[in-house]
Image (cartoon, rainbow over all chains, first blue to last red; front, side):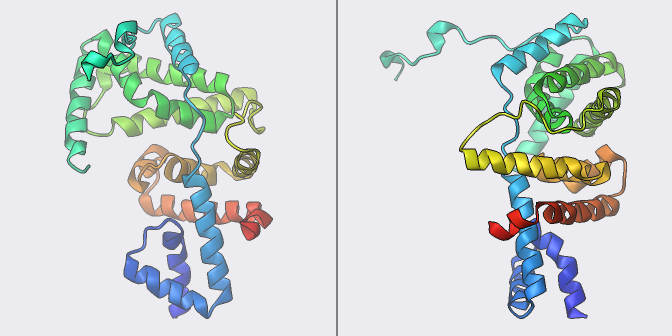
Length: 95
Length: 180
Protein backbone atom coordinates (compact mmCIF):
# COMPACT_ATOMS: atom_id res chain seq x y z
CA UNK A 1 0.00 0.00 0.00
CA UNK A 2 2.79 2.31 1.02
CA UNK A 3 4.71 1.36 -2.13
CA UNK A 4 1.78 2.41 -4.29
CA UNK A 5 1.76 5.81 -2.61
CA UNK A 6 5.51 6.15 -3.12
CA UNK A 7 5.18 5.38 -6.80
CA UNK A 8 2.56 8.08 -7.11
CA UNK A 9 4.87 10.57 -5.41
CA UNK A 10 7.79 9.92 -7.74
CA UNK A 11 6.63 12.46 -10.31
CA UNK A 12 6.33 15.17 -7.68
CA UNK A 13 9.77 14.19 -6.39
CA UNK A 14 11.17 14.45 -9.92
CA UNK A 15 9.75 17.95 -10.31
CA UNK A 16 10.98 18.95 -6.83
CA UNK A 17 7.43 19.71 -5.80
CA UNK A 18 7.28 17.52 -2.70
CA UNK A 19 7.28 19.06 0.78
CA UNK A 20 10.58 18.29 2.53
CA UNK A 21 8.97 15.83 4.93
CA UNK A 22 7.53 13.67 2.16
CA UNK A 23 10.75 14.08 0.21
CA UNK A 24 12.73 12.56 3.07
CA UNK A 25 10.14 9.84 3.55
CA UNK A 26 10.43 8.87 -0.11
CA UNK A 27 14.23 8.93 -0.05
CA UNK A 28 14.20 6.66 3.00
CA UNK A 29 11.85 4.25 1.25
CA UNK A 30 14.18 4.22 -1.76
CA UNK A 31 17.00 2.76 0.38
CA UNK A 32 15.16 -0.54 0.52
CA UNK A 33 13.62 -0.48 -2.91
CA UNK A 34 16.05 -0.51 -5.83
CA UNK A 35 13.29 -0.09 -8.40
CA UNK A 36 11.86 2.95 -6.65
CA UNK A 37 15.33 4.42 -6.23
CA UNK A 38 16.10 3.97 -9.93
CA UNK A 39 12.75 5.47 -10.90
CA UNK A 40 13.28 8.49 -8.66
CA UNK A 41 16.80 9.30 -9.80
CA UNK A 42 16.28 8.78 -13.54
CA UNK A 43 13.03 10.73 -13.61
CA UNK A 44 14.55 13.60 -11.65
CA UNK A 45 17.54 13.67 -14.01
CA UNK A 46 15.15 13.85 -16.96
CA UNK A 47 13.28 16.80 -15.46
CA UNK A 48 16.55 18.53 -14.50
CA UNK A 49 17.84 18.14 -18.05
CA UNK A 50 14.77 19.91 -19.37
CA UNK A 51 14.62 22.60 -16.70
CA UNK A 52 18.31 23.46 -17.16
CA UNK A 53 18.04 23.74 -20.90
CA UNK A 54 18.79 27.38 -21.70
CA UNK A 55 16.80 27.17 -24.92
CA UNK A 56 17.53 28.86 -28.20
CA UNK A 57 19.02 32.31 -27.95
CA UNK A 58 16.84 35.24 -28.97
CA UNK A 59 19.56 37.15 -30.74
CA UNK A 60 19.44 40.84 -31.63
CA UNK A 61 19.23 39.73 -35.28
CA UNK A 62 16.18 37.60 -34.54
CA UNK A 63 14.63 40.45 -32.53
CA UNK A 64 15.07 42.81 -35.49
CA UNK A 65 13.92 40.28 -38.10
CA UNK A 66 10.69 39.63 -36.17
CA UNK A 67 10.09 43.39 -35.99
CA UNK A 68 10.67 43.70 -39.74
CA UNK A 69 8.23 40.87 -40.42
CA UNK A 70 5.60 42.59 -38.27
CA UNK A 71 6.15 45.86 -40.16
CA UNK A 72 6.09 44.11 -43.53
CA UNK A 73 2.70 42.56 -42.74
CA UNK A 74 1.21 45.87 -41.76
CA UNK A 75 1.73 45.83 -38.02
CA UNK A 76 2.10 49.28 -36.55
CA UNK A 77 4.71 48.66 -33.90
CA UNK A 78 7.01 51.03 -32.08
CA UNK A 79 10.25 49.20 -31.20
CA UNK A 80 12.40 50.01 -28.21
CA UNK A 81 14.60 53.04 -28.73
CA UNK A 82 18.26 52.22 -29.29
CA UNK A 83 20.55 53.40 -26.51
CA UNK A 84 22.41 56.48 -27.73
CA UNK A 85 26.13 55.89 -28.21
CA UNK A 86 27.03 58.42 -25.52
CA UNK A 87 24.90 56.51 -22.99
CA UNK A 88 26.39 53.08 -23.69
CA UNK A 89 29.52 53.55 -21.60
CA UNK A 90 29.83 55.01 -18.12
CA UNK A 91 32.01 58.08 -18.00
CA UNK A 92 34.27 58.47 -14.96
CA UNK A 93 32.34 61.58 -13.96
CA UNK A 94 29.09 59.50 -13.88
CA UNK A 95 30.53 57.36 -11.09
CA UNK B 1 8.87 38.58 -5.75
CA UNK B 2 5.19 37.77 -5.03
CA UNK B 3 4.58 41.52 -4.78
CA UNK B 4 5.71 41.96 -8.38
CA UNK B 5 2.81 39.98 -9.78
CA UNK B 6 0.05 42.54 -9.12
CA UNK B 7 2.29 45.36 -10.36
CA UNK B 8 3.09 43.39 -13.52
CA UNK B 9 -0.53 42.55 -14.11
CA UNK B 10 -1.49 46.18 -13.58
CA UNK B 11 1.13 47.31 -16.09
CA UNK B 12 -0.04 44.62 -18.48
CA UNK B 13 -3.63 45.75 -18.04
CA UNK B 14 -2.64 49.30 -18.98
CA UNK B 15 -0.73 48.04 -22.01
CA UNK B 16 -3.62 45.93 -23.23
CA UNK B 17 -6.00 48.85 -22.84
CA UNK B 18 -3.61 51.09 -24.76
CA UNK B 19 -3.29 48.46 -27.47
CA UNK B 20 -7.05 48.15 -27.84
CA UNK B 21 -7.13 51.93 -28.27
CA UNK B 22 -4.60 51.70 -31.13
CA UNK B 23 -1.48 52.94 -29.35
CA UNK B 24 1.50 51.74 -31.48
CA UNK B 25 3.81 51.87 -28.46
CA UNK B 26 1.72 49.25 -26.70
CA UNK B 27 2.43 46.42 -29.14
CA UNK B 28 6.12 47.29 -29.03
CA UNK B 29 6.11 47.00 -25.26
CA UNK B 30 4.17 43.75 -25.31
CA UNK B 31 6.73 42.43 -27.80
CA UNK B 32 9.47 43.55 -25.41
CA UNK B 33 7.88 41.59 -22.57
CA UNK B 34 6.86 38.41 -24.36
CA UNK B 35 8.88 38.36 -27.61
CA UNK B 36 11.72 36.25 -26.29
CA UNK B 37 9.48 33.68 -24.58
CA UNK B 38 7.28 33.29 -27.63
CA UNK B 39 10.33 32.98 -29.87
CA UNK B 40 11.85 30.28 -27.64
CA UNK B 41 8.55 28.44 -27.48
CA UNK B 42 8.01 28.50 -31.24
CA UNK B 43 11.64 27.57 -31.90
CA UNK B 44 11.26 24.53 -29.66
CA UNK B 45 8.10 23.60 -31.47
CA UNK B 46 9.29 24.19 -35.03
CA UNK B 47 12.98 23.42 -34.67
CA UNK B 48 14.45 26.22 -36.73
CA UNK B 49 15.09 29.92 -36.33
CA UNK B 50 13.48 31.16 -39.55
CA UNK B 51 10.14 29.49 -38.89
CA UNK B 52 10.28 30.52 -35.23
CA UNK B 53 10.82 34.17 -36.20
CA UNK B 54 7.97 33.93 -38.65
CA UNK B 55 5.61 32.38 -36.10
CA UNK B 56 6.63 34.93 -33.46
CA UNK B 57 5.88 37.83 -35.82
CA UNK B 58 2.54 36.28 -36.77
CA UNK B 59 1.63 35.76 -33.11
CA UNK B 60 2.03 39.47 -32.37
CA UNK B 61 0.22 40.42 -35.56
CA UNK B 62 -2.73 38.31 -34.42
CA UNK B 63 -2.65 40.09 -31.07
CA UNK B 64 -2.81 43.38 -32.94
CA UNK B 65 -5.62 42.25 -35.22
CA UNK B 66 -7.66 40.97 -32.30
CA UNK B 67 -6.73 43.74 -29.89
CA UNK B 68 -10.37 44.79 -29.56
CA UNK B 69 -11.15 41.39 -28.00
CA UNK B 70 -8.32 41.57 -25.49
CA UNK B 71 -9.21 40.85 -21.91
CA UNK B 72 -6.91 42.24 -19.29
CA UNK B 73 -7.86 39.62 -16.74
CA UNK B 74 -4.58 37.82 -16.45
CA UNK B 75 -5.38 35.33 -19.19
CA UNK B 76 -3.38 37.25 -21.77
CA UNK B 77 -0.22 35.14 -21.45
CA UNK B 78 -2.24 31.96 -21.84
CA UNK B 79 -3.99 33.39 -24.88
CA UNK B 80 -0.67 34.48 -26.39
CA UNK B 81 0.90 31.04 -25.99
CA UNK B 82 -2.22 29.43 -27.39
CA UNK B 83 -2.02 31.59 -30.52
CA UNK B 84 1.66 30.72 -30.90
CA UNK B 85 0.97 27.02 -30.43
CA UNK B 86 -1.84 26.99 -32.98
CA UNK B 87 0.39 28.78 -35.49
CA UNK B 88 3.12 26.22 -34.90
CA UNK B 89 0.73 23.33 -35.41
CA UNK B 90 -0.42 24.90 -38.70
CA UNK B 91 3.17 25.36 -39.80
CA UNK B 92 4.08 21.78 -38.93
CA UNK B 93 1.10 20.57 -40.92
CA UNK B 94 2.12 22.71 -43.89
CA UNK B 95 5.79 21.84 -43.97
CA UNK B 96 5.84 18.53 -42.11
CA UNK B 97 8.77 19.82 -40.13
CA UNK B 98 9.15 16.89 -37.84
CA UNK B 99 12.91 16.51 -38.12
CA UNK B 100 15.53 17.68 -35.62
CA UNK B 101 16.40 21.36 -36.04
CA UNK B 102 19.00 21.74 -38.78
CA UNK B 103 20.37 24.89 -37.22
CA UNK B 104 20.51 23.85 -33.59
CA UNK B 105 22.97 26.39 -32.20
CA UNK B 106 26.26 24.91 -31.13
CA UNK B 107 26.58 26.64 -27.80
CA UNK B 108 28.75 25.56 -24.91
CA UNK B 109 30.97 22.54 -24.77
CA UNK B 110 30.72 19.77 -27.31
CA UNK B 111 29.51 17.35 -24.63
CA UNK B 112 26.78 19.76 -23.53
CA UNK B 113 25.68 20.36 -27.11
CA UNK B 114 25.54 16.63 -27.80
CA UNK B 115 23.39 16.19 -24.71
CA UNK B 116 21.01 18.97 -25.78
CA UNK B 117 20.68 17.54 -29.28
CA UNK B 118 20.03 14.07 -27.86
CA UNK B 119 17.38 15.36 -25.46
CA UNK B 120 15.65 17.37 -28.16
CA UNK B 121 15.76 14.47 -30.60
CA UNK B 122 14.14 12.24 -27.97
CA UNK B 123 11.58 14.93 -27.15
CA UNK B 124 10.65 15.32 -30.81
CA UNK B 125 9.96 11.59 -31.05
CA UNK B 126 7.29 11.71 -28.35
CA UNK B 127 3.61 12.03 -29.24
CA UNK B 128 2.47 15.66 -29.35
CA UNK B 129 0.24 15.18 -26.31
CA UNK B 130 3.36 14.42 -24.26
CA UNK B 131 5.59 17.03 -25.89
CA UNK B 132 3.22 19.90 -25.13
CA UNK B 133 3.23 19.59 -21.31
CA UNK B 134 6.98 18.96 -21.24
CA UNK B 135 7.71 22.06 -23.31
CA UNK B 136 5.29 24.29 -21.42
CA UNK B 137 5.98 23.12 -17.86
CA UNK B 138 9.56 21.85 -17.83
CA UNK B 139 11.18 23.94 -20.56
CA UNK B 140 9.12 27.14 -20.43
CA UNK B 141 8.45 26.89 -16.70
CA UNK B 142 4.74 27.73 -16.91
CA UNK B 143 2.48 26.58 -14.09
CA UNK B 144 0.29 23.51 -14.48
CA UNK B 145 -2.76 25.81 -14.52
CA UNK B 146 -1.33 28.01 -17.28
CA UNK B 147 -0.26 25.01 -19.37
CA UNK B 148 -3.67 23.40 -18.90
CA UNK B 149 -5.38 26.60 -20.04
CA UNK B 150 -3.17 26.83 -23.12
CA UNK B 151 -3.86 23.21 -24.05
CA UNK B 152 -7.53 23.57 -23.11
CA UNK B 153 -7.46 20.53 -20.83
CA UNK B 154 -8.00 20.08 -17.10
CA UNK B 155 -5.12 20.38 -14.63
CA UNK B 156 -5.34 16.66 -13.65
CA UNK B 157 -5.20 15.70 -17.34
CA UNK B 158 -2.20 17.99 -17.81
CA UNK B 159 -0.41 16.46 -14.82
CA UNK B 160 -1.11 12.96 -16.03
CA UNK B 161 0.29 13.77 -19.49
CA UNK B 162 3.27 15.48 -17.92
CA UNK B 163 4.05 12.40 -15.84
CA UNK B 164 3.66 10.02 -18.74
CA UNK B 165 5.68 12.36 -20.95
CA UNK B 166 8.53 12.52 -18.43
CA UNK B 167 8.58 8.75 -18.17
CA UNK B 168 8.46 8.32 -21.94
CA UNK B 169 11.31 10.79 -22.38
CA UNK B 170 13.32 9.09 -19.64
CA UNK B 171 12.81 5.74 -21.37
CA UNK B 172 13.84 7.19 -24.72
CA UNK B 173 16.98 8.64 -23.19
CA UNK B 174 17.63 5.24 -21.61
CA UNK B 175 21.36 4.66 -21.41
CA UNK B 176 22.06 8.37 -21.14
CA UNK B 177 20.13 8.45 -17.87
CA UNK B 178 22.02 5.45 -16.53
CA UNK B 179 25.33 7.06 -17.34
CA UNK B 180 24.80 10.51 -15.82
